Every structure is written in C-alpha cells, then in structure tokens.
Amino acid sequence: MQTVSGRRGTLPASPAKPKPKRKGPGRPEGASGVRETILDAAECLFANLGYAGTTLREVSDQARVTQALINYYFGSKYGLFEEVFLRRGVAVSEERLRNLEAVRQAGTASVGDIVRAFLLPTAALRTSEQGRHFLRLQARLHTEPPHISYALRDKAYGVSTERYVEALQEAMPHLSALQAHWRITLMVGTYLYAFSDSHRMEERVPEGQYQADDCQSLIEQVTGFVVGGISAAPQNLA
Image 1 (cartoon, one colour):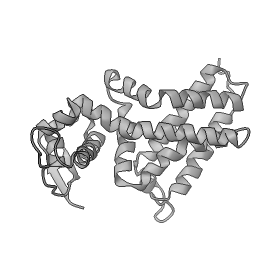
Image 2 (tube, one colour):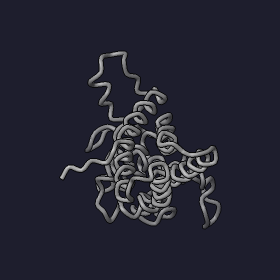
Image 3 (cartoon, one colour):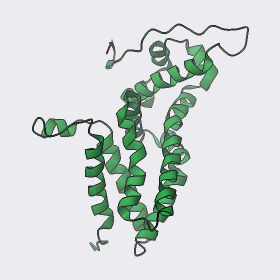
C-alpha cells in the first residue's frame, strides 16, 4: 500500500483519481462517487489525526479534489466531520436495534444475547480497512472536546443505547436505572478499546497465539468479559 509522509507522520495514500467533470453550473458529474471519496479520505485522516489535527487542505489532497468541492458538499470542516461519523454510526445503531428486536422476538433475551446483539455490528467493521478507520475515529471521539463529541454521539447512538439499557433491565430486574446505564457504558468502553485496532495483544502475547483478524475469537473474548461484568452482583463498597 502506498503511503504519504507529512508533518505528523505517515498515512495511507489514496490512488490517483480524476477530478469530477462539471456539466454546466450545477452538481458535478459522478457526484456520489466523489462525495464518498471525500468521506473515505476524511475518515482516515480524522481517525489518525483527530478533529483539530486535520485540515481541509489535507483532506482535499488525500481525496484529490479541491477544498471548494468539499465546502460545496459539506459546508464546513465540522459539517464534514459530522457526516463522516454519522455515515457509519447511524448504520451501526440501526443494526443494533434490528438485532435487539430479533433476540426479543426469539424469546426472553439473556444478557449474553443482548451483549452479542450490541457488539456484532461494530465487530463487523474490523473486516475492512475503512471500517477499521471508523473504529479508531469512534474511539478517538471520546477524547474530542464536548462541543464536538456529545451531540454526535447522541445523534448516532442515543436511541439505540437507551433501548439496550431497557433490555438489560428486563433481563436483570434487580438493577437500578443507574446500575444499568453504568454497565452499558462500561461495555462501550470495553469494546471501543478492544475493537479499535490497538495491537496491544500482538505486543504481549507469544507469537502465533493471537490473530488480529480473528473476529470470532474477538467477539467471544469481549462477550465473555462483558457478560461477566454485567452479570456480577452490585457491590456496596461504602
């Protein structure tokens, strides 16, 4: 894979793409493809450099389009960032809701059923390079300033997260609303770290015992850990 070097390290290089042809003063020809190219380039840069660290000039260079074209589609840097995040975030949230409905229709949902239904859409993103970029972006979003991150997280995941809190309380009626929210929050923190391609396991486990692309093993390990934590009796440490 080709790379490009800049002031903050090395990033994947996008293949050369012709600039879109215009047919008169309106929308560029091939607009849908160009728009996705911009989103893909921005996703990679935002994932690696963060919101503040990424410039529209870098996005335009990576996507091989003009900054004016980026503004034409997205209006501003934040508009681009928002659309990059929501493009996959909303899809993940919708799939989580479908998964939850499926396990509920099948009968009483166990804690394990709930956890797997929640994790599977994001685990699937690890199978593609762009999906892995998004997972890093999603993990990085929690370090972005609140005025950037809070509204985006709520817009993408607010409804589905509340449904999972409700499902967890149905499966574990003894949990208070606070306890259920805490346990879903801790599940999110666990999967963000485990799924974000951090390579920690490769650094610490003897060679050959860990395969970064073994999605099934990843799901089993994270699910087992999370189910154990969620199912633990509430502790009174006072």
